Length: 136
Image (cartoon, rainbow, N blue to C red; front, side):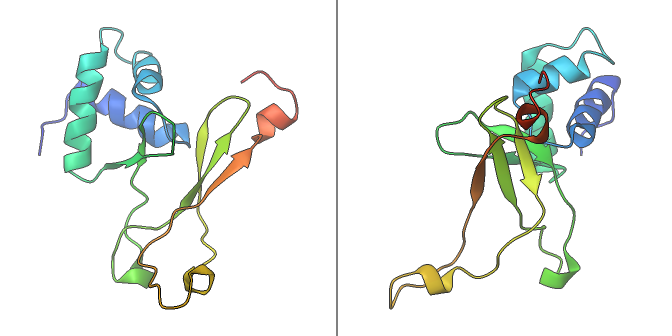
């Protein structure tokens, strides 16, 4: 485990308090409010370390750059496995939000004889700010 530094704490705080998945550039901008000297290479170093420690996870959406969000923690309902959730991608501001819900098994949607082992769902539309016309 990497030692806690002001830089590392600023990166983790930015991710944990954002309430959504962030690009490295967004993490940099938010973390620089605490540690102005941060740069993008430092952000990537901390992202890699925090992923190795399972403190954050990578969010991959088709056609999008990788984003990162805080790990939701362990889900006791699934034997301690990490919380399974989906995402909402705003077409207006391009932000990505976690949806802490899941419709359940997708096996009924698969063709006969196929076995579903995992699924990912991304809803797309406008977030609350964009649907009200608020600046993002």
